[in-house]
Length: 166
Length: 102
Image 1 (cartoon, each protein chain N blue to C red):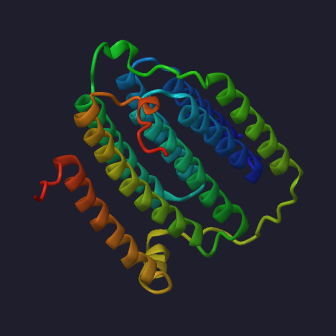
Image 2: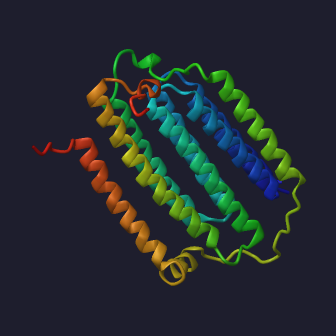
Image 3: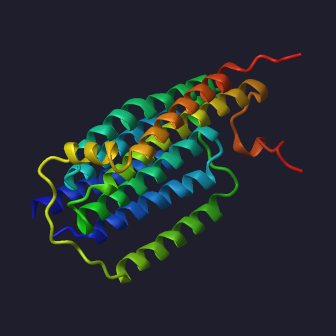
């Protein structure tokens, strides 16, 4: 009974804040609603017994990406902030496409046959994740480090403005 | 009893909300936020599949971590591009960013 209630509350939080984020006219409010959605997703990770991922979610999404978004909002603001996040003229087609995709996905999910495993989750997930990352997935791990470095350098150059060579 | 389908439906709903935002929003920063929502729903899917179909292997968690890494890189570069364009054009509306066309 308890997991059902927790899942229901988290689902309401996630869907409600995500809808509020998309429908809000104020871009700063949208950023705050997005952070709340990410907290709800971290709770979902906890119900899936993925504690390490929940911590990573809080640290990176709520801590870093939301703050980065607020910086982006503040640095590009122009005009009235209370009408900074309006819809464009594709709102009707957007609703239609999203609703159709949701119906298709829901039907596929409900008609598919899943084969749940009978194994249990390891007691602690941190050690096995470290083992996987440092042994089986060490090349993707190093590539991810390179991606982060390249993205950091690229973001600095793009935001600073490259010097023109004559 | 919460089964795999509940998590998949939740992730599908979150993905569709993000898709709607990415299609129908004017501001480029809002589009980036919506893309973050979509990436988050993919992460929910990965972790839920890992939990219910192969809980002893944790490969889904590693995949989710790589998705988070790519999302962080994407949002940093995306915001830098938005700021750079804003400095040039004084606008972040995606409908105005139309000079990359033949």
